[in-house]
Image 1 (cartoon, rainbow, N blue to C red):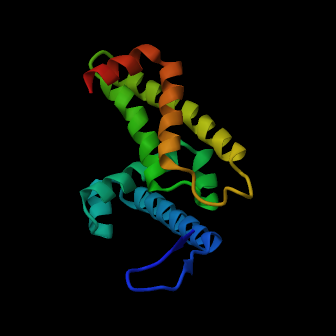
Image 2: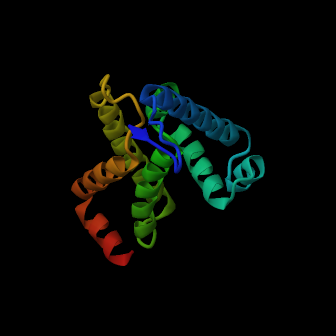
Image 3: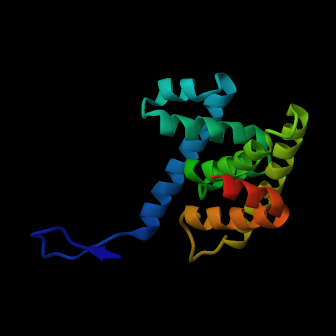
Length: 171
C-alpha cells in the first residue's frame, strides 16, 4: 500500500506486517483491560471512569468484559491471538442480546439466561472455527468486523429463523 501527502512527491510504503503487529498488540491489551475491569468492578460506569473515552467506548469495554466470563473457550485465545478486538466482541454481544431482548416479552429470567448461554456457545464455536480457518500466513491482521457481523447474522438466521426474522421486522 502506498500513499503520499499533499506537497510530498516521495512515495511512502506502509509496512503492513509492522502495522498488523501493532494492531494485534493493541487488541490484546484492550481485551485484557476489559477482563480486568470486569473482574474488579464490572459495568459501564467503571469503564467510563477508568477510560474517560465516552459512553460508547465504555459500553463496548463492559460488554467485552462480560464475554470474558460467557465465552470461556474463545476469550483466552482472543487475548493471546489479538485478531479480535472490542469491536468484534461487541458484534457478538449485540447479536445475542438482540435476540434475547426480542424474546424478553415472552421468556422468564431463567429462559433468557438459558437462551443467552446457548447462543453464546453457538457463536463461540463459530468464531473459534473461523479463527482456525483464517489462520493463514497471508492473513496476519485482525479479522474483518463486517465479515464477522455477516457470518454471525447468517448463523443466527439459520439457528433461529423465526426469532431473527421477528427481531429484524421490529428493529
